[in-house]
Length: 413
Image (cartoon, rainbow, N blue to C red; front, side, top):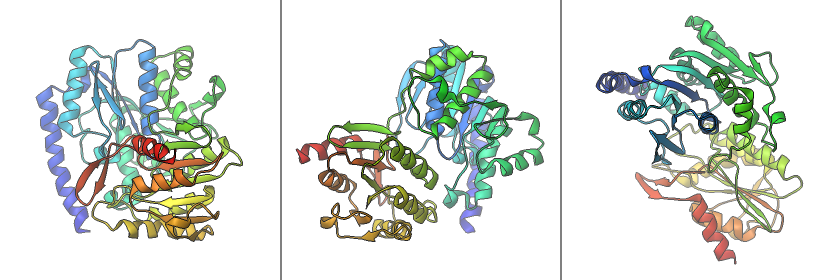
């Protein structure tokens, strides 16, 4: 409870910083069309897809996402642990885009950015919420608070799309009605009645994962609201490649290695279920962990998802910060055990199905998984994706999931 009030006090500070930032840079969002995307999962894919569609339609566009930022024709590197920058950085980038003559600015927006007023003063023309599931409760304390933070993106916009098929729909709708924002709300979905109800995968030349159908539909709805035609949208979708670290196949010879950023129970469910469907009948080896100083109640849930789809699971570090990484792994293992998994020593890993081991060092865990991989196995590494650092104790260490895989493959040879 003390943490809650401390954060509220900090947010007052952030609010005044946002006011000053807007004043200093001259309220730039009033001079450019800002498109916002938030949600627990799917934000980055949707954000970069919208950016790709607009660019393909020859619209001058800037973007900020988890993976990267293109501002005023210049690429800025991201890849650490903050998706939406501080208020001064956001306003500075908006000003650069305006001065460059950009028409659109696509902004991936986190619940933290909304709750901490980082995007206060940003006038979105249209927004979308992909989904709201179990995540960030360490920071927001309750799911209700988390949902309210996400919902504020609609309050900040002229029109906001919400997913009628998502479990959060009824609570989101109720909150927005209570805030007298129902006229701003538009809907999209595949199953329930919605303003935009379309299986976009039927318009594409290559298959996409089931969960990505919603991300693509959200992007479609946003771009239609910006005046683009179906032809412009679908032509661009057909040339779009998923962001780095999103169901990314990095090795596909005698066995397959896939890197994915999934780090929530829902994210793991969607990623692993899709991979199982894409590679039927093949042994699935899953390597993952859970970040520290976050919602620890999700850890057994993540273990349960791994136990549902994986044949072998290797638990490892994922930004353990000041927590004990072994304790984090044991909390995840609770969910694995409920799915019938049993623990084996690391040197025995790979010999018996429905077993798990713990190797805290992520590089060593990846090396072990690749060492035991057999022909036609599918090795899935989740949690880090595109990120370029690992947090141990209070220090960030350089990290690349891709380089770790490359190193392990060379050692296997």
